[in-house]
Amino acid sequence: MPTKRVTSHDVARQAGVSRATVSLVLNRSESVVIAKETRERVLRAAGELGYKPNSAARMLVSGQSETIGLIVSDPSILLVDQFVTQVLYGVETANRQLGLHVLVAGLESDGPGSTYDDLVESRRIDGLIVLNPKAGDAALISLIEKDFPLVLVGSVRHPREVAVTFATRPALMKAVDHVVGLGHRRVGAITFSPRSFIATEARLAALEAGLRAHGLALDADAIEIGDFSPESGHCAGLALLSRRPDVTAIFAGNDTIAIGVLSAAHALGRTVPQDLSLVGFDDLPFAPWLTPALTTIRTDGVHQGQIATQMLFERLNGRSPAVPRVRLEPDFIVRASTGSAKP
Image 1 (tube, helix red, strand yellow):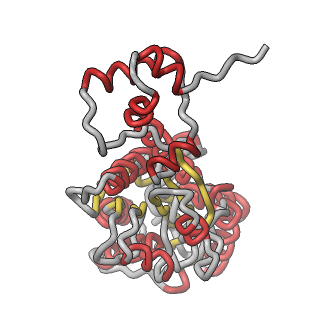
Image 2: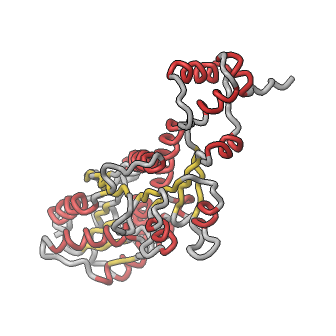
Image 3: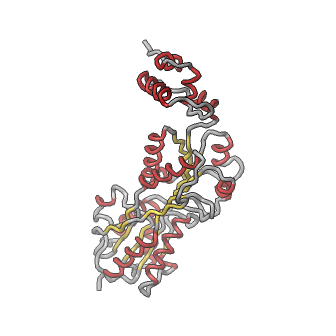
């Protein structure tokens, strides 16, 4: 026999208050002053009874959906990039603690009827977190300029954006120092995405700056473009190493791409790190367990997602984050995939 659903009448009866008071307390209404003891009694009764408010009715009362949207700039990333799932985990756990829900969507277009329009105009969400935004995303920039509550995990370099990013350059400079210190002078790079992503350009720029500091260059023909997946890293690795067999070290745009580069090196009969040194980015959970264990730059996607959620929560409550652009410091982790260059 199905269990009877607990109603606001039941909560009101147990707390010894009116149903209207229950509604005001559970909808966090500030239109009426309610004594702290009364609020606590209502919340205690709701918890004891296991009362779950009807979300549709609550939205009608409060005008809020109590849901935030998480937009992934390219939905195909969800299939291949574990960093995205780490950010998603951070966002989801932080929202659960705040009593909010998360709606995940992939960005399909930026014109009329886009994902932004579907979520924002329909009032299905109260705010947005956008992961790895693309440069020049007109619809996203429009939302920023309209002051819609959103936080970027990444950046579009807009003066009014609220964002949490990583300070890419210092860690990559350490990685370059390490590789050059091992005797490598001919270095290649494989990006994790097309170059329309600001994070991709930032990592390439940091790598180039690090090499310049040692009097070296990243040649144009020593760069290949990845497309998120290990397969794209494999194909890019084959192309780069076939065109430039003199390259002795490769910086992969992320650890997922590095898996493909390892496979490409093996297919071409090159051993890592004896014939080719390899550096990744992200330090995903599988990185220490590859053969060889991957030298990489450690970021913390879970922490980044949690911070983005806290920043958005402040915006949803009418407060500006104390620091609108949070920059986290990655660590450089040396493992077995980098070794001395052959004489």
